[in-house]
Length: 203
Image (spheres, rainbow, N blue to C red):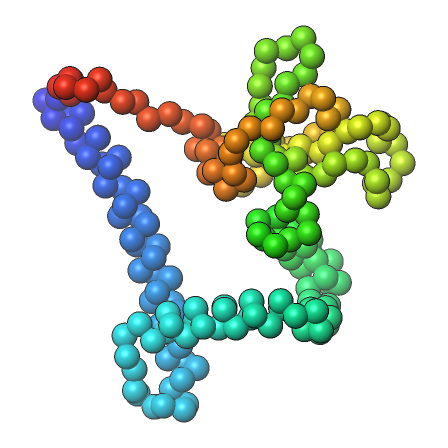
């Protein structure tokens, strides 16, 4: 009975991520299809081809990306964002989400400064994995310590959030890892997969 329970738990752990991923993908596709039907029904009536909503959504996103790649369109985008950047509560939510999204923009102006690092302070063996989000204290209000310092974002495991600390640049050591890999590993608390030795039978 104990072995059967272990097999069940292993099977559940293996199947659950796949099922949840497929379920979320199905829900997204269903929502896109419904939205496409609502937009196209006044024009095409009941005509519908499965997958048409996804094609329209991808085309729309690509089109928006193409437009905002031009400087003159970005200037007009400022007017669109105006309500979202001035209403008190909406401003906080929108600014936070936009800053987080801009952080992962491949062509963003700050991308070169973003780096995954190990944070160690002198005399301690504790290591923290973080993301350098700022180099230097220029532009910050008075009160921060002067010198060659960096801002390091420390993401939290199993949570959307983290802490930002300002430390001397000598405390951080770059590591060969992309921002996406570091965020993904931090989200699951750097959990390691246990691997059984080759040829060994499961307990």
